[in-house]
Length: 121
Image (cartoon, rainbow, N blue to C red; front, top):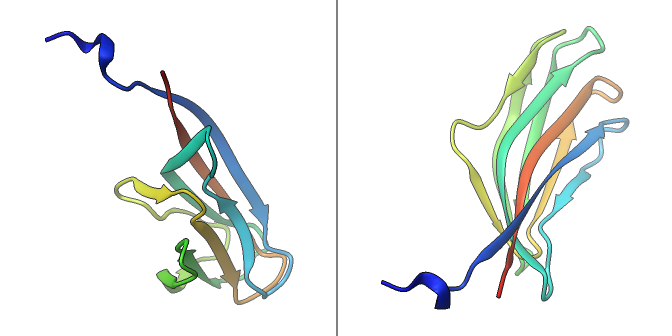
């Protein structure tokens, strides 16, 4: 089988990070859109409590049709703990958004490891 005519994908790795300074929903990451990169795979979501107080955490994904899907709701992060939220990869299509909310301001940091993909020639 000749694979030379098969569509190839180009990838790049990146991180999205945020310190949650408010108790309002905070944008962490938006999957790329357009002609270049058009979907992403989230490999890891680390949440760290560095303020010495147990804090609840909510993570949502908003689809491109503006429907909000709750991935974790009021997930408890213990004081001075780091938690990996994913046990498997999470795929985001073009324009999908990841937001998070903390029950206490200035307590949590979030680090998302992402591989973005673009259609090659």
